[in-house]
Image (cartoon, rainbow, N blue to C red):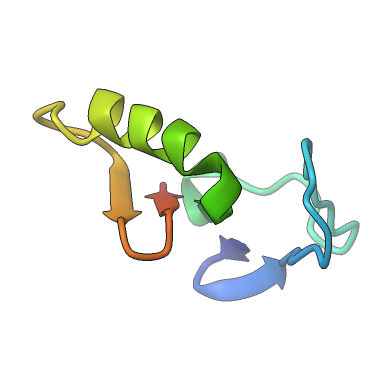
Length: 80
């Protein structure tokens, strides 16, 4: 999800697994990057629980990690 001054301007929720996702809204041009916020969530299926656990083990122990984890659903979220 991408928001500009608190308003959602782009969102993408694929119905199938995706490797690279990008979004663009041509209505908003020449915006100040400080007015943009973005939220990413990565969800691993049970088949890839080992990949999630490796990611979790690497990032969850860092003091100021930007990641938030949901270990029941094998997902990680990043907001900035």
